[in-house]
Length: 215
Image (cartoon, rainbow, N blue to C red):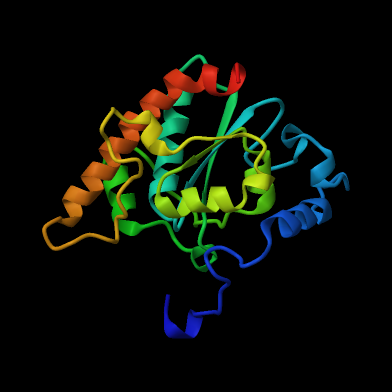
C-alpha cells in the first residue's frame, strides 16, 4: 500500500464496552428481509458463504491475507472429498481493519499454487454478522483469538483455536509469516504454515460431527 493509498483505520479492537456496543450493533443490523440479527438464528442470515441448511465454519487470522485464506481452501477441498460435502460452508476473515480488502499474500499464493490451491480475491475484515452466524470459529493466531474473546457476546457458535487440532505439544497458534527472526527463512516459515494447516484441517474433518452436529 503506497503512502497515497493509506487511510486512517480504527484500532485492532474497538475501544468500547463490549456488552453495550455489540448488543446495539446486532440489534441495528438487518438482513435483506429486514429482520434484526438479534431476533433470528445464525442459520437464517443471508450470507454469501451460507446457503440452505449448511453449517458455517469461519477461520480468523490477524490480517486475513495468508493463513486464514489458505486454511479455508484446504478445508474446502477436504470437505469436498468427504461425506460432509454440501453440509458445511467455509470462509475466512481478518481481524485487523487496516488490512481489509488487501490482496492475498503473494508469497503464500505462489507456494499454495504449487500444491494445487488457488488463493484469489482480497482479505475481508470480520464483521459482527460474520461471527454471529458462524457455527464454528477457528482463530489461527493470538490476535484473532483475542478478537473472538472481545466479541464473545456476538458469537453463537463454538470457538476452537487451531492448535486444538494439532498434535499434543504443538504451539496453539500458527506462526506469523511476516514476523520471523534471521534464523528462519521465508521458505521454512511458509513450509511450516502449510504443513500445519494441512494437518490441522485433517483433524478438523474428523472432529466435525462432535463439534457441530452433536454439540
